[in-house]
Length: 177
Image 1 (tube, rainbow, N blue to C red):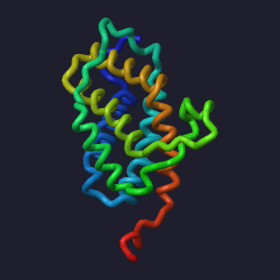
Image 2 (cartoon, rainbow, N blue to C red):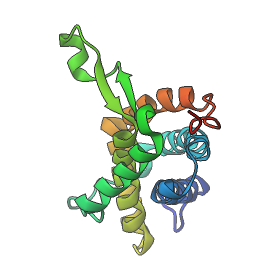
Image 3 (cartoon, helix red, strand yellow):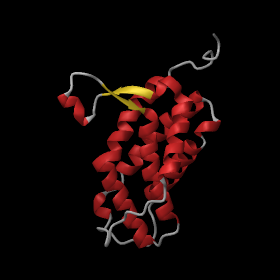
């Protein structure tokens, strides 16, 4: 399928990725309920848009697409900001961890790490696509879709469960003791 422009869904993936990255970067400046609400609305839309990217639309990359734009200190900063915002609500019991099949004890995970892992993928994707020619953009979309299938799609699903639970929590009287 030869085309000389991005599809509406591809443009939506870029826009949603950018919106997600902005929300994560601003986590330290919003209230928990606002942040959680934003994540609960954004993550399913990202999931749908990325699953609608069909692998057959993209050619295999001619070379490895492994440019990393997000450095470790910035990753740690956004993760820490989300962890501080969620406080004790950051930790949840993970049921889809590979080690669960060998363990009788629950495995703890954090919303902040899951969201930061997704942030890393989408941040790098937005940076890659931003100033690239169409042919290379299509390769980045193919890589994003493949990586989604291999690992970060499951992370997105896993983190939605605790966020969904937290979206019903009343944070208004947390400071009253």
